[in-house]
Length: 455
View 1 (cartoon, rainbow, N blue to C red):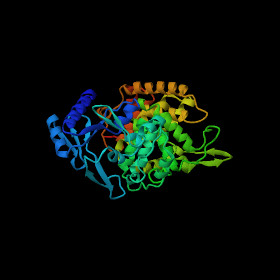
View 2: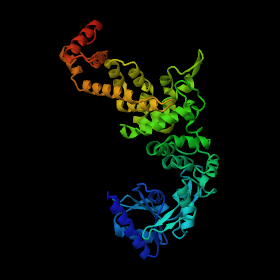
View 3: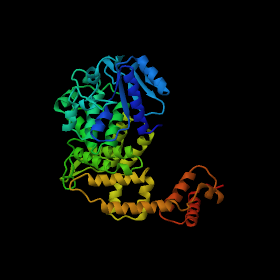
């Protein structure tokens, strides 16, 4: 794959050849927006006006191997270049879904009508590839200066319901509020026909690219658009917490704070998306466990009682096996690191915790985010030092020799029913720090006691 500089050079070569044929080439979309915001974006989108599709295809064939990423939509590429090349088109909605459109390529539609089909004004600015001249028909430059997400056209915007999610996602990533008229328009759009893949992708961008992913969900709340795809998140609103430990208010407020704390740590995570989803889901169980007991608000066992709710939420949005396994594991364990630190628990106890965790590093990050995501804020430094020291001790222990199934067979035991119980017993001894030869003797004694593996 060619690098960024080579891709820009190819875009300029393409623009010169298009100009020689009587047309013009413009950078469009997020690439222009991010350049104006002085942010890095290496995904170049070029829109070619004023020449016929056959002329563009001939030019591309002369530059390299032409890729047809949607010929009927007028979308092309060049092999080895991260460059999307499109022709202006008219789109007409024929259904309620994100892809329910008829598309007519029209290279002579003009820049204003071409830009009108875009979602937000900040994404509707064109930049001439050769001259750098900006073409702004809908006030995108002013909205960039003011920092506002505003829709381009009230008639065409609702035709693509995914734009509701995109408004929330851009608000989170750019740190721009959504214009009031856009919020009101978004609140009237039905999201039920969208696919879970598209919903998940917009959420993923917010969770992994925004400094404050909470803005994504807050924007959807402002639009009254949580109920269909994110009902479990919506139900956090108004669930009370003990004000002694949670002066920030309800579980919604706490979850949004934890989400932003996790975002500040996600670059350290083994599975960043897993961390962020765990932060979002970690207190779902409080919805069904919160009670006032002897005048005190309590949520006993919320970390385990919430697991069916977490599973339902994840199943609605993704089939990614790693996430379906990791997030419930993290949610179930998220209370324990802090509790073990406060109790100054034994090395054996922390070894057992880390052994249960699918991603011990990420569990630690989730726990620290939970501590930081409330008022008054809990200083995470003592817990961080304690848990990192214990995690290093666990890793060192797991590098030491431990009893294996072959060791038991070599000692005369026969594999069969309950043999796994012997391995579990041996592993538990290893977690306590026991040297292998001693653990083997004790495991063999346990086998004799339980009559397991007798030849």
